[in-house]
Image (cartoon, rainbow, N blue to C red; front, side, top):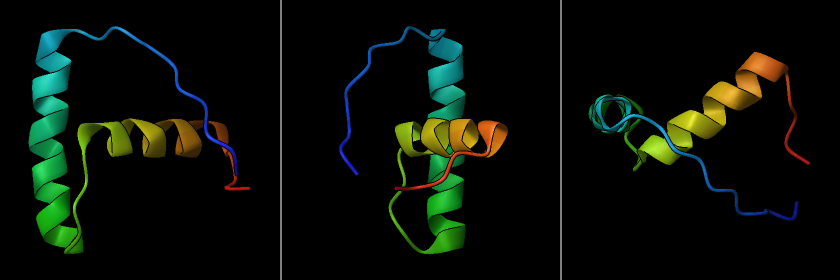
Length: 52
């Protein structure tokens, strides 16, 4: 799969909350996740997108 970069703006409070959630998920899943990983997952889940 070829990735493309996009730029989005989100409220700073969202970013802080997503970073906090990413730390929690990282511990639960025993892997390193970022807030961007959570955004990707949410988009993929919401729209039923598959990895190519």
